[in-house]
Image (cartoon, rainbow, N blue to C red; front, side, top):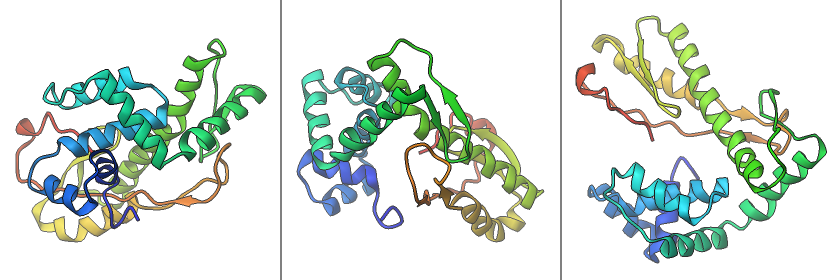
Length: 222
């Protein structure tokens, strides 16, 4: 589904009550307020950080352009949880159950992390975010290494946690794009993970620009 639908827009449609097509049309027209709220409400629900933190996330990542009340943030989180009840009921509970054994989580590559904070919500929130953030960061970094090895003429300029900014000679852009996309979208096998099983492919978007690096220094990924 992630190859066809924008998950942030799906959440925006849940929140506003509009159809997916309506919200996607709004986003493509250049107005991304609803999508931004959908994006950060999903992250807030995944990480169990609550309504106050959602207000801060939306404000910060929009550069202060989007302001929602704490009450509204709470209502948004209720909508998200209603549509994806498995996050709190299965994922969060699975994290807590695993931590109760030895306070240790294992990511899909078999790397372990033990949590030493005082037992309770703050420790749980840290753990909720760990697997997802680890997967994204490691996937980005390992993809960058493979791309640099496979296409030596590409130069890495910036890593933004979930995105890479690369410089590529014009002569090899066309042949490089499918290679980059294939590397980024190599499936992640969760057989070593302490919580999940199965295989996940994270879709990759590639944006081209002839802008020089000085003008791209504030680049942020999505």
